[in-house]
Image 1 (cartoon, rainbow over the protein chains, first blue to last red):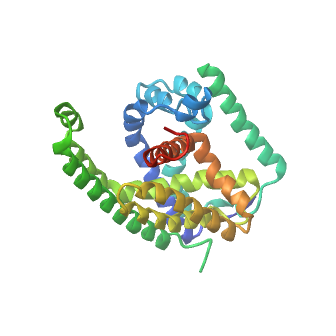
Image 2: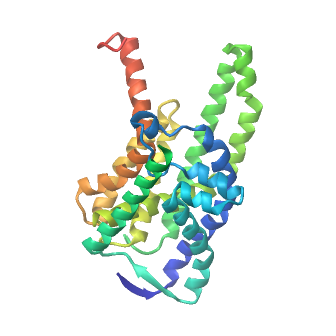
Image 3: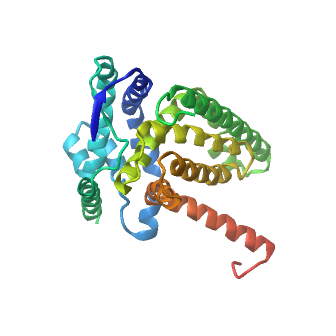
Amino acid sequence: VTWRPAASEHRPLAFLWSLTALATPALLPWIAGAASHVPCLFRSLTGLSCPTCGGTRAAQALLAGRPLEAFLHNPALVLAGGLLVAGGLLAPIWVRLRGPVPDLGQPLPLAVRGLALAILAANWGWVILRSS
Amino acid sequence: MPVTSEIMRPLIYAVLVGGAAAAVAAFWEIAFRGMMMPFLPGEWREEMGFAGETIQQIIFLFFAPLIIAIALFISSAVIHLMLILLGGTNRGYMATMRVNCYGETSSLAQMVPFAGYFFAVVWWVVLMIIGLAQVHRISHGKAAVAVLLPTVLCCGLCIGLIVLLISAGVFASLGLGGLR
């Protein structure tokens, strides 16, 4: 991965990321409420949890002020959500300061991709084990 | 046409097209619900709550541009993550985001009453596969996996089930096959 200073072309993306980060806490009650009435069809049909199962319960736990419980419901999803919010709040400042941004324009090495895939698979395994 | 920089114009295009499609789709839904209402049993009418549903839809339309922009940002991130895992990122996130923004053209199919959503999904998948294959210079198969895998794992089965049920209903009503 090569890094280069943030340019003006990154500003709209940083703004959009920031907007998403600000909207996420507002969407949490909706996820915890309305989405809880929608059953996971992957689970209904296969008997297995899908990779994003536990997201609604995690949102409910976060709203109740239990971050650890939320993390245990689906670690990767909660971490990704945390990164989305934290990154979104920092992105406009980072771009304004011309901080380095990664250029993801080349395929990553096989080992890195394998590791990422293993982490996602392990998370899915955890979600399945926890819900069984 | 640039494929990596300048995200603003594609985003504005997507928000305008998506917003217009959502408005027409909401109009059809409100109109057909209004037309169906007198023929429904009393308890169904109370449960559906025409006024409440209509107000909800109008509120949704007000926030539609924001929701479309956020949805594009997140769905592009998920698709780009899939491309990274598949080793198919010959250009950056901006390229994936641009393809997704122009793929929003498919939402125009929502303007067709009843089957519009189904056509929009199919059209979106086709546009995304072609667009990602061109922009990232990858095979159509790899682009298809990047687009379809997250959908299949999370909600694709839902779409598949709906398609299956609709097909079964159509075949049964026509008296074809053994689906009665």
